Image (cartoon, rainbow, N blue to C red; front, side):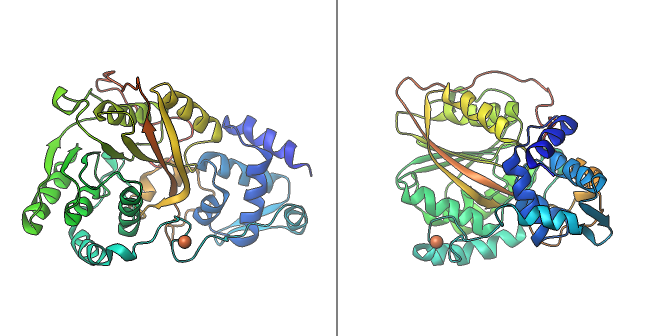
Length: 348
Ligand SMILES: [Fe+2]
């Protein structure tokens, strides 16, 4: 069986570009995991294409599907043994993020307690939020890169509660949150009052251009857009519009669970046009809490086996960039257009 041919057939059937490298990772994943969500996590390419691959491998007699999950046949195992095995060699202390939290153990303790009272995700707003550890690591990284102390910071959509960690640290000069979900803005506001920090919170739909007062007013922004190009352009483009000068920094998450590398290429090309430059892309930095409405998603409908995930399986890379002279943001108005779904997406 030729892996290049398999990749071509999967690409054709799913209309999502899948490479021989992707298929190799999938085969490696199938040697280690049986449940659909674990296989997706390890395979690291879009859910619809992973599940289409499973169907193809089953048709070719390389794999069987049962309620216990996927199992390579003898022939499938022989093929899988020919490719590079999947191994996790990331540093156990930081889980591959390349940063330490030890400098902030006090903030960590307080945040872990506070976030227990947070509102649960709502499917309407595509709110898969990250683990509290992830938010803390994101803060530590931004601190280390010089994007926190004495800075004016805006968070565009704050289901990850970045504003609370920033507020607890007392390090930024100003913190602004624009967020569409009033339950979240209320929670952030109440926490700020209780913990004694200042945060400016506004209810706002990022499909519309940022109000003037936020344009060119910040040194750093954080956002975690839905994984379509339009939504990324809207959220990240607004973030860039909010930045003040050259060397201002933006942070966002982007996954491969809902984006092929050709979508990554389009994303990077699109953002480079704003005259920014990527300084960091950290694989699997962001780990998302299983959001509880799995059964309502396209991913669930596509899955050959209907089992709920047992552990967190959805992860994304953390991108950081800085602005160059002549940078500009996105002021396009998307009205009430649905910018949140495309062929590679599956969790909305
Ligand atoms: Fe480490």
